[in-house]
Image (tube, rainbow, N blue to C red; front, side, top):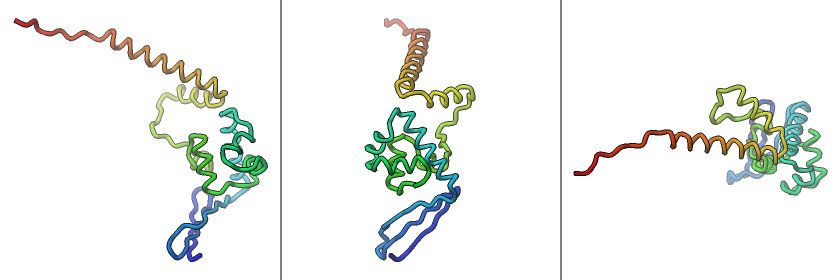
Length: 160
């Protein structure tokens, strides 16, 4: 091992080790406080429950033992970077959200009531979320059809 790099973002420290050939060998995360570890575990647990999975289900998806996942959710351990990335991909979220709780907003939603409803929907079971999505899709399709039906039909000049 030849070089170590320490980076920090919101009390989450990352140490990356490189060899002489500049090949990354190991990366580990160090959480600054037990509070941050507990918050990370809580987010993993909430996301797991939102998907309707047991700890054993998620452990199998991430390819770790049940006891290891339990320690993640309890805030005792933090996964290595590769497992952290895998968790984010499985949950359809970002590593940033798992570590800090900051959600990335690609397109801001300006209607706060609607945003609040979407956040509430995330707490529902996966089947109920799917029902809500289908209902929204149906409403959007209905609106588009109404727009097509009520739009004026272009008139063409008669041919001589």
